[in-house]
Length: 92
Image (cartoon, rainbow, N blue to C red; front, side, top):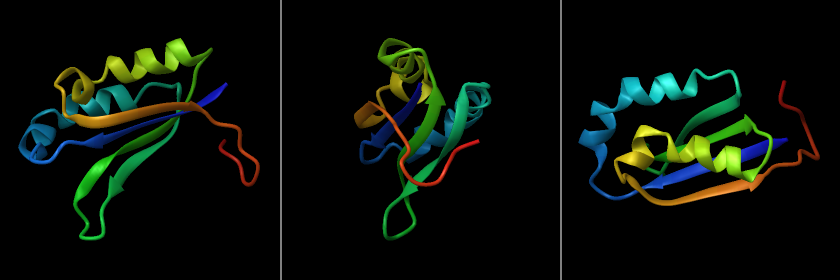
C-alpha cells in the first residue's frame, strides 16, 4: 500500500534541521520511498517534508516516521500519516 507521511516543522528549528541533514537523507534513501520532498512557505522557507512510501500498513508507515531524526529530535509541530490511493496520475 502507498502512504503519505508528512511533517510540519516547529518555528525556529532551522539550525537543527541543518545539523540533522545527512541523517535525514539516509532515511530518505530507503527503497520504500516512492517520492519525497520539502514543503516551502510563500517566502521559500522550509516548512516541512512530505513523502510517499510503500508500507504494509499504518503501523509500518508510522514507524518510518518515528524512526526519522526530525521526529526523534522533536522538530515537528504536527505530523500526518494517511493511506494514499491515487486517482489521477501515477507514481512509479
